[in-house]
Image (tube, rainbow, N blue to C red; front, side, top):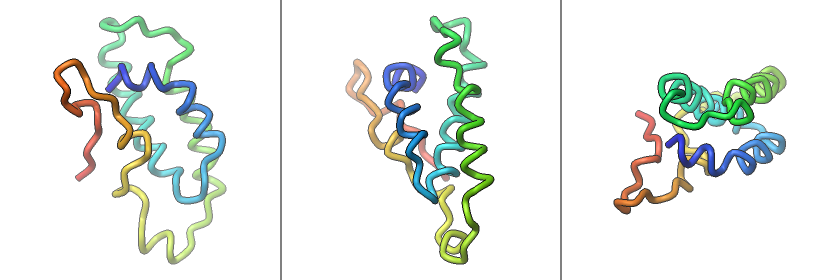
Length: 104
């Protein structure tokens, strides 16, 4: 999962700059998950500060503060949906999709 994040960092950052309403919660969950992995395995990867996911959290938090809470938004919710980022996980050497996050 971290490998995919590092590989797609620039694309993720660009996508976050163009977030549409309703995507903030998805990105927030994704970046928080990556941030916890980044902290836990920082010594196992060449974790350049450029890729620190905590630097992306303010972008998502700002979006969440301006996102309207309409009845449709509340009814459909966004935390259960997968992001494009999760669905576009690359295959690892074994050919599995182990880098895709599943939400319960």
